[in-house]
Amino acid sequence: MRQQSINESTVDVAVFQELLKRLLVGACKPVFVVDVHSIHKAKLVKQYVDSLDGALKLFYLPPYSPYLNPDKQVWAYVKRQVSKQFVQDKDGMKRLALGALRRIQKLPTMVKSFLQQQECRYAI
Image 1: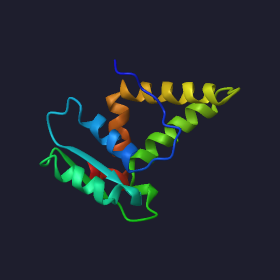
Image 2: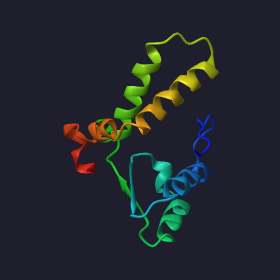
Image 3: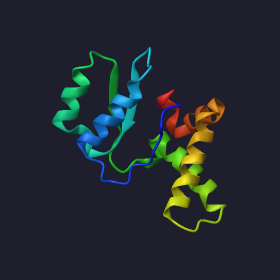
């Protein structure tokens, strides 16, 4: 299993491009990414995506529309799981959050449930 981590730095174009590269590892079909952040519309990101000949497609949500973003469903779940446990420090919180994310990875039906939310069905 690949080492997973939680990014603590500011997400800039380079960090976002690295994430996109990681998403493509092992992909046999095009990967679709839905997002709203303006940094993801940067010229360097567009050039990178264009260089992949359709292996990666970015779709942008309207500003201020978190209810349309399936990621928000994932983070709401993680926050609920972490908030149920006693956290003593930042490292403990990171461990709990990463553990919750790993549990989600092992439960495809849960991932599908995030996409089944009425507002997120467009992403299916």
